[in-house]
Image (tube, rainbow, N blue to C red; front, side, top):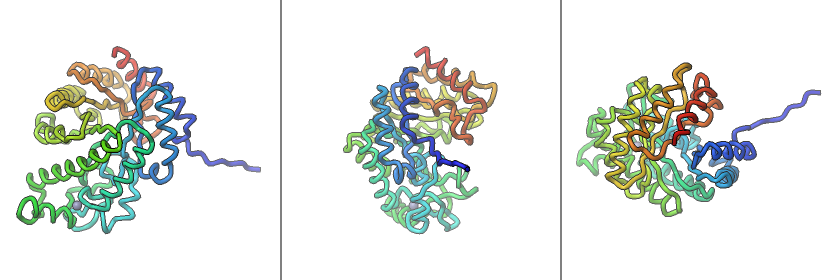
Length: 328
Ligand SMILES: [Zn+2]
């Protein structure tokens, strides 16, 4: 006799509840739960239970549209993109669709409203709008040397706002246009979320140096329904020294102070190289020294559960992070 049993461990609420109590014992005040399209389709009630378990542990529950449409950060696949490859995905400059939704496409905007409704239904406290972006040639699923989006909605909007056809090359003006489109998209999502009783947080990905990001990020800081603005300067991922955490923390802190927002910095506790775990403590010190009052780790137990982003030595990385946070 052989005996088997299926095991989908990551959404077993009894385990989640124990982990939430563990985080609370370490004085965390909130837990961020990824809420992917897979969760939306198949874990909708489970997510409510996970949010409740987080509240029961005495913490706030934050949700992240993890990989949704592939427009937000995260490794999760997008069912929306595969179902709508010909009518709602980004079109790159080679004329072919890429497997990520276009933020200007009305079908995707409607889909996001459904995601927000489910997030509100879960009774979560905050939505973290994580790294909203157009096609990135250097990330998962990106096509090297290509840019987007040149779909009919983007080209029409470009002509309407610029009074001329969208160029075939990604000029600085096209880069500005894309940033404006993302802000318009996020404003719509944040307005709906706020109306549903959810607070809005935003995490911007460092693509340029902190100084070069200032003007663009200032425009993001002025979004009317935003309460918390953050960034995720994952220095080892970006192959930079840990000191960049200081630069981005100072920028975020300044933008937040000018716009009445709370400053948040995400600390890299994923893909940390063996032997360099002390840098996690250094990053936490640097962010705190700039006056950032909301520090968050990505992620739990050094991401041991996801080998692609796990630290080389997850227990050691996690212990280093907890040790550094103890001071606060
Ligand atoms: Zn488009």
